[in-house]
Length: 68
Image (cartoon, rainbow, N blue to C red):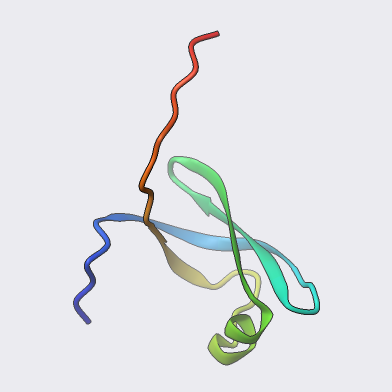
């Protein structure tokens, strides 16, 4: 499969917090833990579960930086 998204992190599903319409998926990556909000329907369609290996595909049009 070819993708246009260049920012990808390999990881493992650490937690799924299910909601009626959308759910939060926490992914443990070498860069740290990141979260994705996806439709619950997508989680069911993919049969996604804790422990699954996944790729987090990141599309950002803006990145902010703060210097404390």
